[in-house]
Length: 160
Ligand SMILES: [Zn+2]
Image (cartoon, rainbow, N blue to C red; front, side, top):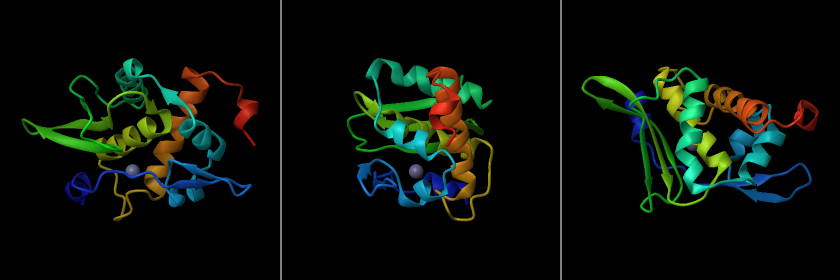
């Protein structure tokens, strides 16, 4: 199951339908429907992380979620149009893997792919739904951490 997911297609952005009916590029409909952090999700996809800060953010997210980041494989390349997240095997050990396009990246895409890697590192069962409830729960936690602790916005801004 997990190996299958590791080989799954790269993530392509979908359109976010906002409650007011506006479309926003960046997230799967299924994730938008399941998230309990819709405001943060939307915010994260309209926000850019500068190229030089991408790796640092990935490591912070892994660290906060207790994923060993020492050997994390982060692939930043012009070859990846969207993103990919999962794990790789290295000398029999599972290491987190994230691939992202070169340059400035939507913050939501980074957190999305890191969430996939966390799901893989914890060997969580997703029942063939890579963007199902298990994934969304991790994604929501990572979004909350990002906005509460790193970005430091007021809880009132998004607890609605
Ligand atoms: Zn995905």
